[in-house]
Amino acid sequence: WARTWGATVAQGDTVGAAIDAYLGVLAQRRHRGEVTETTARDYRKHAGKLRAVFGAVRLADVDVPMLVRWRDVRGHQSPVQFNRERTVLLEVFRVAVERGMVAGNPVSMLGRMKERPRDRYATDEEVAEVLKRAGREVQAAAILAMATGLRQRDILGLRRADFGKDGLTVAPSKMRGRTRKALHFPWSPAMRMACELADTKVTSIEGYWLCNRYGRRYT
Image (cartoon, rainbow, N blue to C red):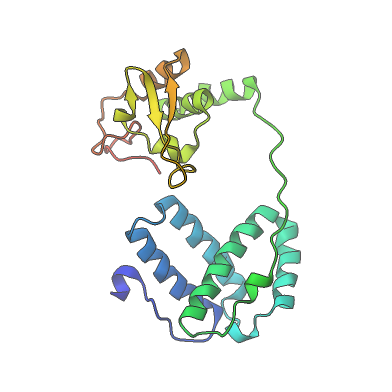
């Protein structure tokens, strides 16, 4: 069981042991389809960063002042990455509390940092330069994104069956679970160009709109 899904009960009293337990829970959630592989990979990456900082620290020694000092340093480097790592650390301690490894979750007392929204869009010249150098699949994805506003995750998850005679119908990942209403995009010259670029000799095993040379979807 531990080799397949990861240990769900970690022995030890360090943050590193709690991270091991969290990764076991994450593997189970991935198996149940509760998180995508891309999300799980990001969480594992953040967990690795946290292990380098807190791995050898005893869980009982982690308090709010220690976490604030970490926020001062890490948040100054990158507020966005700090917020992502804080989210994972919050879950690490939640798992540790559930398994009796520590009594409380001090991360819940640590506030997030304010993130500055993006205020710059790529220029037409920059987009043209990227498209000129990119492969057909990237060109197709980029053109469809500009035509529809869909996120990368949603474009990579598109299937050929989502395209019909009237256009593209899809329920974006940010809307699933909140509403049953899907978005519809009528055919446009840009969408037709994207589909022509995406049309290759390789057929996806699972019917994905974009696939690699082995017929598997991109992640």
